[in-house]
Image (cartoon, rainbow, N blue to C red):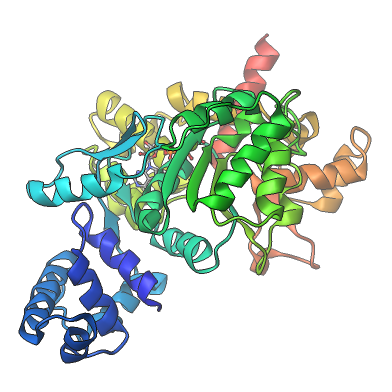
Amino acid sequence: MTVEEALTIVETRLNPQSLSKVQHLVFSQCWQGYTYADIATNYGYDTDYIKYVGFQLWQLLSQALGKKVSKSNIASILKAIASPAAGADLYISNSSNFDNGMMQFEPFSTDTDVVAQKAATINQHPGWAEAMNVPVFYNRCTEILTMKQWLVQERCRLVAIFGIGGIGKTSLAAVLAQHVQHDFQHLIWRSLRNLQPLTNMVAELFQTLPQQENQLPTTPEASISLLVNYLRQHRCFLVLDNSEGILRSGDHFGRYREGYEHYGQLLREIADTYHQSCVVLTGREKPIGFGFKEGTNLPVRSLQLTGLAEEDAYKVIEVKGLKGSQAEMRSLIQHYLGNPLALKIVSAYIRDLFNGNISDFFAQGTTVFGDIRNLLDQQFNRLSEIETQIMYWLAINPELSIVQLQEELIPIAPKPSLLEALLSLERRSLIEKASPSLIENNATRFSVPPIFKEYLGIVFQSQICR
Ligand SMILES: Nc1ncnc2c1ncn2[C@@H]1O[C@H](COP(=O)(O)OP(=O)(O)OP(=O)(O)O)[C@@H](O)[C@H]1O
Ligand SMILES: [Mg+2]
């Protein structure tokens, strides 16, 4: 484990507190095997002072990690936390707002000095122009470590987080920003949900930056060149959130909406030309051309975000005061695929309608309604015709191989379209591949999770009624 990875876990556990500058120094130097005397000599401190800082640091970490921490066991403790096999139970509780170009912490901790100190550091970075709130964030330690590695160590230029609605893409990008803020000069946040033409988006973005341009460009080409130039001159962490907003609905290729194709050109420039910044793209779908650019050893990467680990999803429903056995809680989490938004919505319904009783909720038989239905409508209404057909076939059959799907669908769709649509559905986490142990004759089989089956059944019935 590198010192950066170790520090990420430590900062995550300490959140909303953070290490002071000298604690940070002592931690990183001890991690690299230096003695207190070495640190004092190399950095011009008194040895007793460094020893005292070390003593306080291990006490602080013992509290945060719930184990007696010392200089000699810190590495093994952090390795155990980072290893998913060891059941890492990382909890990040923070409270932050990104508002008026600033990221501010609400007084979450009673230690107001620590909070004020952290807020002051973050406010040095303007550009958080859009309000967002990450009140509680559980774990995602593996994802944060992976992305930090891509951003900080490997200096990737373009990194994307893809996943189904409500899975936590925006929250992850925001929490990641807190982790990497010290490696960047500017943190900039833009949502693409409001469908702004590229020229306007770039113009607004520049208005939030400290060095404002007198003459903002009026053509997309000039806007791209201005932005990429800025990314070259300054090390920026630029989040482009909700990228599905600029993609066509009903198109499984991920093509851009008419009039928004210049965003594709911007992403190509960001991926292909040298600069010192990192652009983080979040979205429900992969834009066309993205797949060709990404790869290990390339400066473009993507993370497919899936549901929360069971122990973290459990915390999401626990705070809503639900009642049920361990097995019932597990069924609820699995049914909603560990999606934190879906779990929050359904827990509120169970609390309000079923007095918090999970078995009563399952007994009434319907798990897709209200805001859960809206969430799924948003996702399914964007599918192409062939994707919708595949979903229906998979919903009425337990599992189908590619050959079986071809037999059913070739009259309607040519073979290449079928394969493209399958790939697109899998990338959107809407279909699942059967586990390798269940694969017969090397034929990959696909299925849809029960929640989508129920949803498709409801939609089908309402179509018939109409
Ligand atoms: N790791 C987490 N721990 C606890 N809650 C979480 C976590 N990740 C996300 N959430 C909660 O789940 C909800 C959805 O998260 P978020 O908005 O980040 O999803 P998204 O993937 O960006 O959705 P969309 O596709 O609609 O933009 C929010 O209420 C958020 O607070
Ligand atoms: Mg989002």
